[in-house]
Length: 201
Image (cartoon, rainbow, N blue to C red; front, side, top):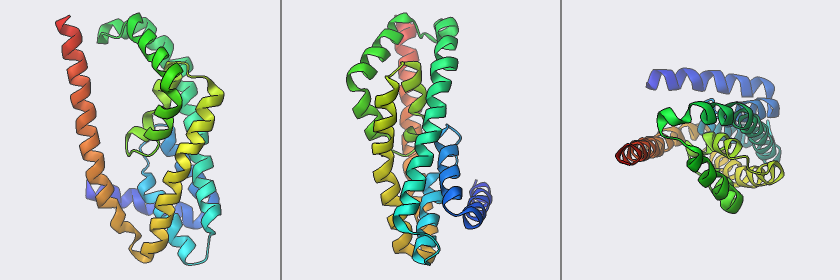
């Protein structure tokens, strides 16, 4: 696993070093489109380049935030036009009925802004939250605004950490992977509990 992460990091850092702000933006767009390209590498390396004077702090932050928002829009529409019809047709096979759709829609109508904003500050979940927002047909304008606002502090935090750590920016990666493991375990446990509960009924 460590070898895979190192290989990914080399590709990411080479792309950012060559493309600058575009590299940061494209990397974050890919990550936010539900492709697990770690922002914990993209943004801190961008911060390292800020510390060397190759990039500006706010330029890097805005490139990461804008890229993340664009990628999230792609994932939103995948959920809206792909995941939503698919689950409506086949959801019953995984115990996802019209009732669950109604609950999800009510949730995103009532709490969608807070959900999108705060999950943007959480590893793993931030990458995939756009899909359920699209599936639940959260109003697009509000989705974009709160995605941007939630992605901004994440970008500021990780770019700033990269600036402060300088050449040691990679020290952040193991720390975030521990968080990733915990969150993934909680998600799996939640899915198992949901399926067990539905099967019981």
